[in-house]
Length: 117
Image 1 (cartoon, rainbow, N blue to C red):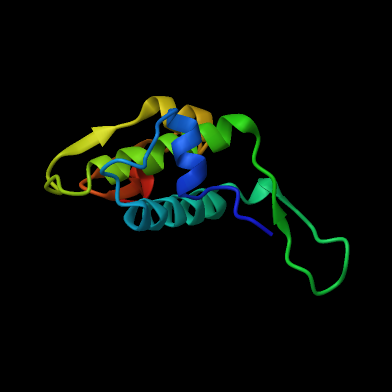
Image 2 (cartoon, rainbow, N blue to C red):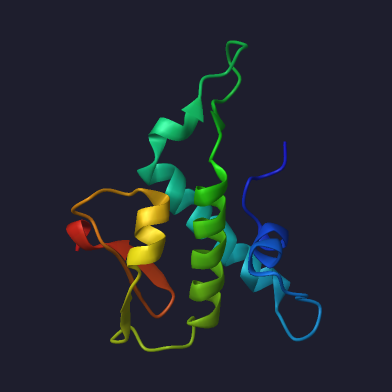
């Protein structure tokens, strides 16, 4: 089963042709990390498997796919920035619905929950 977020989905989300100058291998690494990050924080979006032994399926709405794609691209773009440069991302936090008291921030290429830091 294809992943709900990968480098191809990120390219579709940002509406870009990534063929020129973008390291798609690195972009896929960022997409994988963001996918795991979102799945860890949104367990409510998993649907149980219909067959015993099969894994549950993550079923994000379009707003979550859009926000996760934007976050993956932002972390890709900011991967060379120092960790001291931290950006608040209230727009993506709202779209991901990660909680009213949790802000979404990242420094360099590392997204993290404000509540966890």
